Image (cartoon, rainbow, N blue to C red):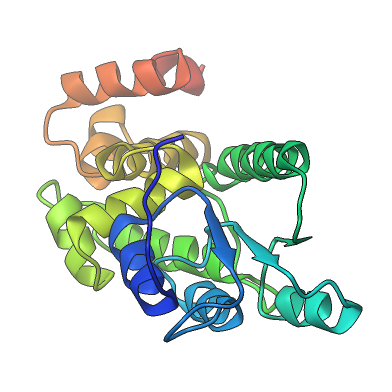
Length: 221
């Protein structure tokens, strides 16, 4: 693990928003902001809501544990805790994150009432990309502005959720939409290339083949 440290709760919140770590381990009793407040703020912030949080505390009673979980903690360990248990918790939370990455890497997320912040973020992200699909100049900078995030914050958020870079995620959505158009329309392949933001049909065919393992012509067949 590569570690970042903070000496109080507020500094932890600020550092988490800036660095977007893969996982957070926090004490409950801290100056400025306690662990419950840290957990609540980060879980309600779109930039950090996906980050798993483990709370550590000397308060072993059920009410304290329930309070931690109610603020969005993914795990709650009482002191003194077992280092082995902590390592297993970390491993399992990271494994779960990898499973979610596989799920969130799909582009066809549907709108609904029961979406969590991660899915709401990705749906909004996809909407912005699809609204500008034919614009070949629409890229990372334009998308970060639309999402009101810095380029680095957007990259870390998308990477955490999908294991893709921002530019790779944009390209995947363009090509996924192209495959959909190949299956549902009679548009010529070059027309579909233009529709999804590729000005060069030859490059489109190369990118499509890299993404799906077959050229667009075989999808039509």
